[in-house]
Amino acid sequence: MVSCLAAPAALAQEHFTEGAVWECNSYRTKQGHFDDYMKYLRQNFLPPSQEAKKAGLVLDQKVYVHVPTNPTEPDVVLCTLYTSFAKALDYDAGDEAKAKEIAAKHWKTLDEQKQRDMASKRFEFRDFFGTAFYREVTLKPMP
Image (cartoon, rainbow, N blue to C red; front, side, top):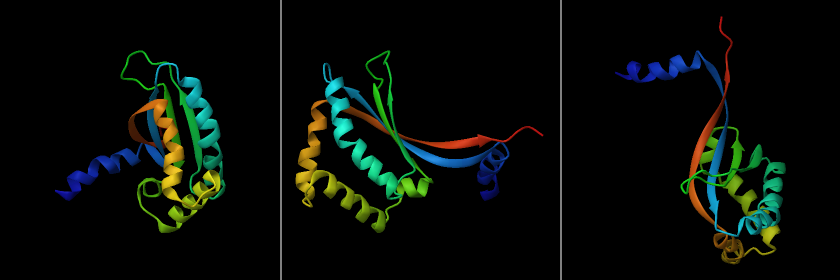
């Protein structure tokens, strides 16, 4: 039975090489608050994101803007690139300590509740739709 379950994964490796993993969070800005949210991201997402990249916590971050065609689609997607699913999903005390240091520097306080309070301004500007994970793959040429 185990060999049957492993077969699709083994066959998939024939077609591609696995790469890094993107964690993408989707949001819909509230009416009239797109510019407010972009300003918030420039002030409070970009600087810590750049520091996280320098610290080796993440490989990259991207902000995607989308023109929704219906109310269930996001208009802003924030993506973070990790080396693997393990790096994206597993807890690491060292990484958490680095992330807390970056947050304290950005918000100019060690008090995590004060940091959360200052960051909560973003909730006035957008609604959270969900998180999805995507693995990059490199297709192998046909023989």
